[in-house]
Image 1 (cartoon, rainbow, N blue to C red):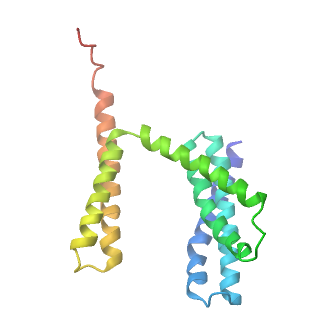
Image 2: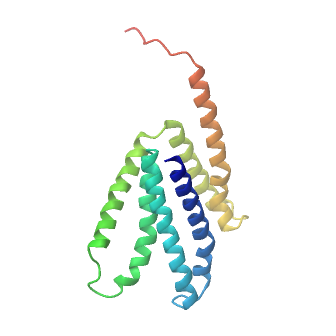
Image 3: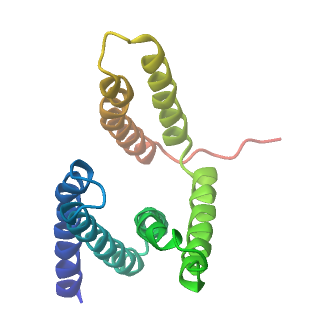
Length: 181
Protein backbone atom coordinates (compact mmCIF):
# COMPACT_ATOMS: atom_id res chain seq x y z
CA UNK A 1 0.00 0.00 0.00
CA UNK A 2 2.86 2.39 0.78
CA UNK A 3 4.26 1.87 -2.73
CA UNK A 4 0.91 2.85 -4.22
CA UNK A 5 0.77 5.99 -2.08
CA UNK A 6 4.33 6.94 -3.05
CA UNK A 7 3.36 6.52 -6.71
CA UNK A 8 0.20 8.61 -6.22
CA UNK A 9 2.19 11.32 -4.44
CA UNK A 10 4.69 11.36 -7.32
CA UNK A 11 1.84 11.70 -9.82
CA UNK A 12 0.30 14.44 -7.65
CA UNK A 13 3.57 16.39 -7.56
CA UNK A 14 4.22 15.94 -11.29
CA UNK A 15 0.69 17.07 -12.20
CA UNK A 16 1.04 20.08 -9.90
CA UNK A 17 4.31 21.04 -11.56
CA UNK A 18 2.74 20.70 -15.00
CA UNK A 19 -0.17 22.93 -13.93
CA UNK A 20 2.24 25.45 -12.45
CA UNK A 21 4.27 25.72 -15.64
CA UNK A 22 1.57 25.51 -18.34
CA UNK A 23 -0.84 28.03 -16.81
CA UNK A 24 1.24 31.01 -18.03
CA UNK A 25 0.98 29.51 -21.54
CA UNK A 26 -2.80 29.83 -21.36
CA UNK A 27 -2.60 33.25 -19.71
CA UNK A 28 -0.19 34.80 -22.19
CA UNK A 29 -1.62 33.50 -25.47
CA UNK A 30 -4.51 34.88 -27.51
CA UNK A 31 -7.74 34.06 -25.67
CA UNK A 32 -9.73 31.48 -27.61
CA UNK A 33 -6.84 30.71 -29.93
CA UNK A 34 -5.47 27.19 -30.44
CA UNK A 35 -2.49 27.68 -28.10
CA UNK A 36 -4.71 29.12 -25.37
CA UNK A 37 -7.13 26.20 -25.64
CA UNK A 38 -4.32 23.64 -25.70
CA UNK A 39 -2.53 25.06 -22.63
CA UNK A 40 -5.85 25.57 -20.86
CA UNK A 41 -6.88 21.94 -21.39
CA UNK A 42 -3.49 20.69 -20.20
CA UNK A 43 -3.82 22.91 -17.14
CA UNK A 44 -7.37 21.72 -16.43
CA UNK A 45 -6.49 18.03 -16.67
CA UNK A 46 -3.33 18.52 -14.62
CA UNK A 47 -5.48 20.17 -11.93
CA UNK A 48 -7.99 17.33 -12.17
CA UNK A 49 -5.13 14.88 -11.60
CA UNK A 50 -3.90 16.95 -8.65
CA UNK A 51 -7.40 16.92 -7.15
CA UNK A 52 -8.04 13.19 -7.61
CA UNK A 53 -4.66 12.19 -6.21
CA UNK A 54 -5.09 14.68 -3.34
CA UNK A 55 -8.46 13.13 -2.50
CA UNK A 56 -6.97 9.64 -2.34
CA UNK A 57 -3.89 10.77 -0.40
CA UNK A 58 -5.96 12.81 2.05
CA UNK A 59 -8.33 9.88 2.64
CA UNK A 60 -5.43 7.45 3.07
CA UNK A 61 -3.72 9.51 5.77
CA UNK A 62 -6.90 11.03 7.10
CA UNK A 63 -6.19 14.69 6.49
CA UNK A 64 -9.61 16.26 6.15
CA UNK A 65 -8.26 19.78 5.78
CA UNK A 66 -6.28 18.83 2.67
CA UNK A 67 -9.26 16.86 1.40
CA UNK A 68 -11.46 19.97 1.56
CA UNK A 69 -8.76 22.19 0.05
CA UNK A 70 -8.47 19.71 -2.86
CA UNK A 71 -12.22 19.86 -3.48
CA UNK A 72 -12.30 23.65 -3.24
CA UNK A 73 -9.26 24.30 -5.42
CA UNK A 74 -10.38 21.89 -8.11
CA UNK A 75 -13.84 23.45 -8.14
CA UNK A 76 -12.26 26.75 -9.17
CA UNK A 77 -10.62 25.12 -12.21
CA UNK A 78 -13.77 23.06 -12.90
CA UNK A 79 -16.09 26.07 -12.78
CA UNK A 80 -13.74 28.03 -15.06
CA UNK A 81 -13.72 25.15 -17.54
CA UNK A 82 -17.50 24.69 -17.35
CA UNK A 83 -18.04 28.43 -17.86
CA UNK A 84 -17.37 27.81 -21.54
CA UNK A 85 -20.40 25.53 -21.64
CA UNK A 86 -22.53 28.00 -19.70
CA UNK A 87 -22.27 30.45 -22.58
CA UNK A 88 -24.89 28.33 -24.28
CA UNK A 89 -28.27 28.46 -22.50
CA UNK A 90 -29.62 25.35 -20.82
CA UNK A 91 -26.30 23.57 -20.35
CA UNK A 92 -26.03 23.94 -16.56
CA UNK A 93 -26.78 20.42 -15.50
CA UNK A 94 -26.41 17.83 -12.75
CA UNK A 95 -22.61 17.78 -13.04
CA UNK A 96 -22.45 21.51 -12.30
CA UNK A 97 -24.87 21.25 -9.38
CA UNK A 98 -23.06 18.25 -7.91
CA UNK A 99 -19.71 20.04 -8.07
CA UNK A 100 -21.24 23.15 -6.51
CA UNK A 101 -22.80 21.18 -3.65
CA UNK A 102 -19.59 19.24 -2.96
CA UNK A 103 -17.69 22.51 -2.85
CA UNK A 104 -20.28 24.03 -0.55
CA UNK A 105 -19.80 21.13 1.87
CA UNK A 106 -16.00 21.40 1.62
CA UNK A 107 -16.15 25.17 2.15
CA UNK A 108 -18.33 24.68 5.23
CA UNK A 109 -15.78 22.16 6.47
CA UNK A 110 -12.98 24.68 5.94
CA UNK A 111 -14.99 27.22 7.93
CA UNK A 112 -15.30 24.70 10.78
CA UNK A 113 -11.55 24.10 10.66
CA UNK A 114 -11.10 27.84 10.88
CA UNK A 115 -13.18 27.89 14.06
CA UNK A 116 -11.29 25.08 15.76
CA UNK A 117 -7.84 25.83 14.38
CA UNK A 118 -4.97 26.38 16.70
CA UNK A 119 -5.27 29.73 18.44
CA UNK A 120 -1.70 30.73 17.70
CA UNK A 121 -1.97 30.00 13.96
CA UNK A 122 -5.22 31.93 13.70
CA UNK A 123 -3.91 34.97 15.52
CA UNK A 124 -0.56 35.04 13.72
CA UNK A 125 -2.26 34.54 10.33
CA UNK A 126 -4.60 37.44 11.06
CA UNK A 127 -1.53 39.53 11.84
CA UNK A 128 -0.07 38.63 8.43
CA UNK A 129 -3.34 39.85 6.89
CA UNK A 130 -3.10 43.08 8.89
CA UNK A 131 0.50 43.67 7.81
CA UNK A 132 -0.54 42.95 4.21
CA UNK A 133 -3.30 45.58 4.36
CA UNK A 134 -0.89 48.11 5.85
CA UNK A 135 1.73 47.28 3.23
CA UNK A 136 -0.68 47.58 0.29
CA UNK A 137 -1.85 51.01 1.41
CA UNK A 138 1.41 52.51 2.65
CA UNK A 139 4.36 50.88 0.92
CA UNK A 140 3.78 52.55 -2.43
CA UNK A 141 7.54 52.52 -3.09
CA UNK A 142 7.25 48.73 -3.64
CA UNK A 143 5.80 47.18 -6.80
CA UNK A 144 2.13 46.20 -6.21
CA UNK A 145 2.82 42.45 -6.24
CA UNK A 146 5.57 42.85 -3.64
CA UNK A 147 3.26 44.95 -1.43
CA UNK A 148 0.74 42.10 -1.42
CA UNK A 149 3.07 39.13 -1.12
CA UNK A 150 6.01 40.02 1.11
CA UNK A 151 4.06 39.71 4.40
CA UNK A 152 2.98 36.15 3.54
CA UNK A 153 6.41 35.18 2.22
CA UNK A 154 8.12 36.47 5.37
CA UNK A 155 5.36 35.66 7.85
CA UNK A 156 4.53 32.07 6.93
CA UNK A 157 7.99 30.63 7.71
CA UNK A 158 8.08 32.72 10.90
CA UNK A 159 4.66 31.39 11.96
CA UNK A 160 5.85 27.83 11.29
CA UNK A 161 8.98 28.37 13.40
CA UNK A 162 7.01 30.10 16.16
CA UNK A 163 4.34 27.38 16.36
CA UNK A 164 6.95 24.59 16.29
CA UNK A 165 8.88 26.28 19.08
CA UNK A 166 5.84 26.59 21.32
CA UNK A 167 4.50 23.12 20.55
CA UNK A 168 7.85 21.72 21.69
CA UNK A 169 7.82 23.95 24.73
CA UNK A 170 4.26 22.92 25.67
CA UNK A 171 5.19 19.24 25.34
CA UNK A 172 8.09 19.65 27.77
CA UNK A 173 5.98 21.48 30.35
CA UNK A 174 4.62 19.21 33.08
CA UNK A 175 0.85 18.83 33.05
CA UNK A 176 -0.71 21.48 35.23
CA UNK A 177 -2.82 20.48 38.17
CA UNK A 178 -6.46 21.56 38.16
CA UNK A 179 -7.17 24.70 40.12
CA UNK A 180 -8.95 24.28 43.42
CA UNK A 181 -12.20 26.14 43.70
